Each structure stands twice: as C-alpha cells, then as structure tokens.
Length: 323
Ligand SMILES: Nc1nc2c(ncn2[C@@H]2O[C@H](COP(=O)(O)OP(=O)(O)OP(=O)(O)O)[C@@H](O)[C@H]2O)c(=O)[nH]1
Ligand SMILES: [Mg+2]
Image 1: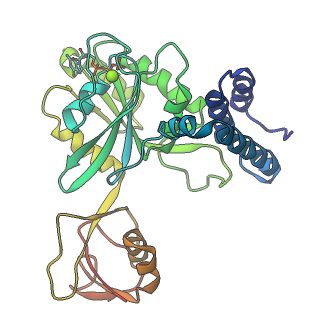
Image 2 (image 1 turned 30 degrees about the horizontal axis):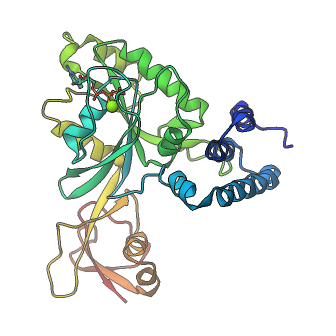
Image 3 (image 1 turned 180 degrees about the horizontal axis):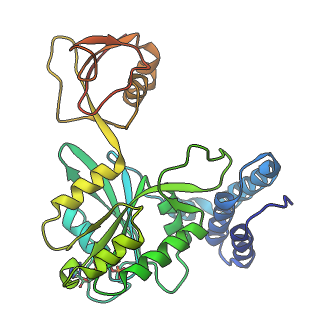
C-alpha cells in the first residue's frame, strides 16, 4: 500500500467497505481514484481499482449500469457550468431565469434533489448550466462531487439575506477537502497532482434583501481574490450572463470558405491563447492533420495573411483553412 494516500482516500475507502449497493461501491471506488495522488507508486493500486469498477459494472446488468452512467450530464454548448451552493440561495431560480430549463423553485430549503441542465444563450454562444441539490448538513452525494469535477467552471451561489460569508467559506473548504480548488492551475503544479482547479464566479444572490449592501461588501472583502457579483435572481440578469461568459476566458473564431463570407452566427469557441492548429482540431481531427496553412482576418498583420498552425488566434478572428 503506497504510504502517501490522503485522509480523503482513507475516508472514501471506509465508505466503500461499508457500501451496501453495487452502485454505491462503484461511486466510492471512483472517489478513491479521484482523490489519490497520481504517480508511479500508485500505478498498481489505480489499475486494481479500475478492474474492480469494471467488474462491478459488468455484474450490475444493463439497466443498472445505464442508471449509473446517466448520473453524468453530457456536455453541450461551449462550456458546462455547475451551479452550486447552500439550500435556498436561489440556484434553481437563477437557472430558471437565464436558461431554457424549468427547475422547481420554492420558498423552503432542499427543493432540488437532482441535477437539471439548461442552456444559456449569450450573444452567439450557448453555455450549459446545471442546477444542483444544495450543500446542506448531510455530506454531498458522490455524484454531485463528480458533476463538479467534470464541469468546466462553477457558479457558487450564496444567500445575501443570511450569513453569506460563512456559507461561502464552508462550501469552499468542503470543496478543498475533495481536492477541488478554485482558481487557475498554477504553472508549477505537478502533473501527478490529484487537485482539480476550477474557474469560479461567486454570486451573492438576493441582493434585494441586503438593504445597505453590507453583506455583499463583506463577501467581496473576504473573497477578494475570486470574481464576485451581486444579483437579484428575479430581475434583469444581463450583467450576470456577461460575467459568466467572461469567466470562461474563451475566444470566438469564425470560419469561411474561399470567395464567401464568414458565418458569424456559429463560432468555434476556444480557450484564450489557442492556436490555429487547435481550432482546426476542434472542427475535425482529420482536417487538422491535412491542413497546410490558413488565411486569417483579424489577428494577422494584414487581412487575409497566410499563417501556420502555431499562429495564436484572437477573439473575433476569421479563418479560411487550406488543405
Ligand atoms: N428576494 C429574493 N428571493 C429570491 C431570490 N432568488 C430566489 N429567491 C427565492 O428564494 C427561494 C429559494 O429559491 P430556489 O431557487 O428554490 O433556491 P435553491 O437554491 O434552488 O434551493 P434548494 O433547491 O433548496 O437548494 C424561492 O422562494 C425564491 O423565489 C432573490 O434574488 N431575491
Ligand atoms: Mg433548487
């Protein structure tokens, strides 16, 4: 047994041993995999856990296995964002207000029990938001943690009509225990590190009930390193939508065919700093392999300049690929 397994690993292992159903066993094995440090010393153990998961999945039969898989929400649009927070903070209301989903909203806590995805339209981009059950007194369900790990970014929603600062603090600490840290991955971070870094927007909701804005100012002061915004979930949320898009730190690039105009309604969405090669890859792997050069309008020194695959693109660029 490798010596440097974390307390979270041992806790997940304990839960695994006590698990009664096969589904739950698989969940805790997945948790053990997720929180385990990744290096040569744990290779063997990791392989062993994967085999166990495969065997349990096979033993479950098709129906149960499908149920297990369906806990994952397939990504759609340019990015997937999990909306998380304490009970009654307005998560479902926000998702209902800015996406096409219709989750239940109610004046009492613990209304939401499962995850509901919805699409938010911002300018010419679609972004997927997931409404989730609250972080309350019980430890979070394993699949909620999985959704958070898989998401591209998080919207943490706290309630400015109560102690929003403590709510945010408790949630951020709980995520840390699960090896989920907010912010950009540090350059010097070890590749084997078990830590997942997540972009985040901290939302102080029910700003209409924070009469003098004091609770929001306290929140900003305490979490100054994180991007924050105050919202009223039932009012105009255009600023929130803009901040959600900005948090993703992406660029939009448009394609055109020779002699024709670019289609500006359907951008390729890429991380800031992406190259022409990465854009081609997103369109199709084989296209990326065949491409010889591209002409670019925008970030080139002049319009229609010929560039190679290592050319760094900018937001709003138009590219014409040549094979
Ligand atoms: N005054 C005010 N009330 C809000 C706001 N946002 C949500 N609410 C109300 O707060 C209550 C809880 O909203 P929900 O969206 O159900 O909260 P939730 O975070 O999804 O709650 P759980 O599913 O229990 O975790 C509802 O009565 C909403 O109408 C807001 O900005 N201002
Ligand atoms: Mg809800």
